[in-house]
Image (cartoon, rainbow, N blue to C red; front, side):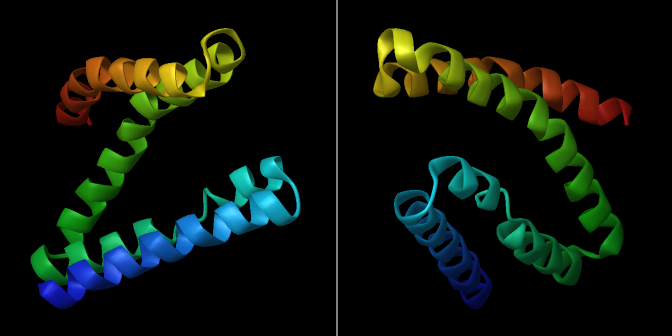
Length: 112
């Protein structure tokens, strides 16, 4: 269990460090595109699949798809409001939007 958590931590940290470097060295938009690399998702799916089975990994993947509903609302909030209220405030408001929409995604996950 600790090895799996360490693996996820290292993969997540590597992805964040790498995308930040790409955004600084090349282009922020390209860094954003690279930030969508599914490395953490792959690691999580492999760990869930090995821990509780492939059916659980499929359910986990469905949760990821439905979790994108609040995530898209969050990221669009940040995109639309950063120029008006600043990055920190738009991140906080985006997080609030995400928190408010997670119950919706959870309910939808029971229907799928």
